Amino acid sequence: MCGCTRNPFPGRRLNPVTPCKLSTSMDDKVNKPTGPLKTCPICGKPQTQATRPFCSSRCRDVDLNRWLKGSYVIPGRDDETDDVE
Image 1 (cartoon, rainbow, N blue to C red):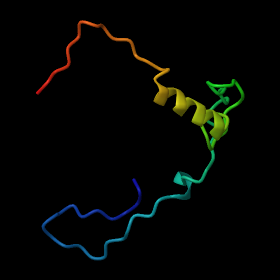
Image 2 (cartoon, rainbow, N blue to C red):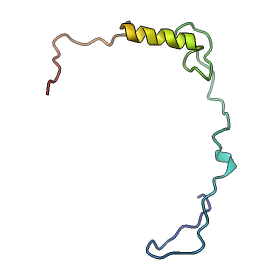
Image 3 (cartoon, one colour):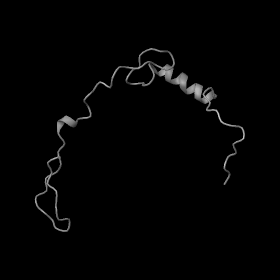
Image 4 (cartoon, rainbow, N blue to C red):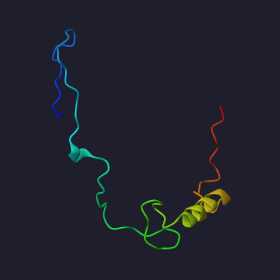
């Protein structure tokens, strides 16, 4: 419970209604460790928080380039037909 006053009777108006106040323990600015840092899938260096899951913007761009060139392909069967509607 957040400690706010809830109106048990929706058709009636109760005064005063106090607004909800979130506790400081639910602050988003708290940096909690998410576990051990994993390595970059491109070069193997440790990840940085700003460019996760990569170690740098360069490795992020290398990965994007591989996707755009078609280096990463999900194999499919040749006999599959696309649904044309």
